[in-house]
Length: 194
Image (cartoon, rainbow, N blue to C red; front, side, top):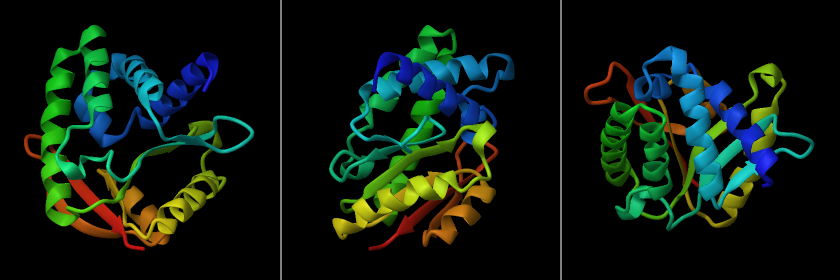
């Protein structure tokens, strides 16, 4: 991804996630959330091995982790930890603390329900100006096809009940539903088996 595309993609991620419950928890200050999330996603996109977009624009984007690069083996997702430092540099050190606490919780949930190798759908977004056009499905189907070619499960997390319904349409099931410690939100861990 070229630098111009990377910045534009980070803007799409930030705009799509600005009202997401988890991102609101990480950066509760709504006045600066969009800017902080753009910094985080710009950093994450620079360090990603698996960033996908639909051809013809940056309207639908996804971040994936391949088997062996996920939190399943107990290693922290270093790109996320480093991205948290972008929050600190942007003046939001408490956001890094919340992010690290959440990641520790999420690692424990994942290890409990799916300890073996799996593909991890980290984030999928559609530019708010292009939502409700079927773009997420057009992006998700080929990604799932690659994962199923490996005969491995696909794992994702969401804190949005509306997202649960969307992912169920693709064959994901809720494997764990729990409250995020110290946060007023429900964490849904979802799995699609091959």
